[in-house]
Image 1 (tube, one colour):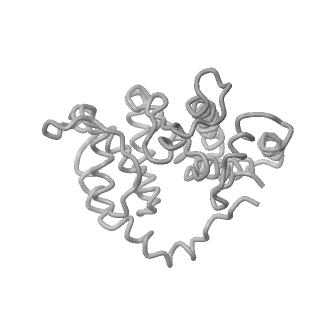
Image 2 (cartoon, rainbow, N blue to C red):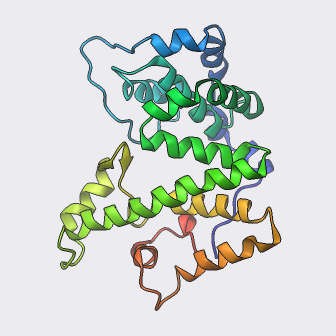
Length: 252
């Protein structure tokens, strides 16, 4: 059975969760002090450093945001501030207020964000809408983003593991690279980590929430479940066979 989510009560007693959002207010105060036009026109420069995708998460918020900021070197400050809000929301820092900031930014700067964010951050934006918006239509529409992108992500990860011809068994060197490094696939999207990755479990949680908005949502959940069944050969089932971490399983 899929691992249940922790309750709000259980989360409250996790000291690590509290540590992960220490200092959040200082970052949002800087954001609130500037308007979007200023942020949009400012280009991030950090000496002679080059842009590098963040990989892994630091418990310390400032350290983690510094890694995320480096990802946006040479790009607009507004794109980093968008990513920062997602990080704060994921770390449960004043979620209602930060989601309001996030939604306000999207309503004001939709065209710019769509044009300039890479797919990784577009997917994260969709996840955020699914998690927190009160409009069931927006939540249902946004769910299509991660469903589409994560399915392609699985396919491209498997192609990386097997090789282009797809006729060899899993290549250990490719698996080792996925387990130890960030493997970029396309447009900011990184490879799925066989055995441990929580991407599909989190997508399953969101899919259950959205499908729960209507009695006929069970049709979609049935389709998702059938993709995991032995005999229905497909990329979800094959990655189910590669998975080892019970806590992050995505099937019942």
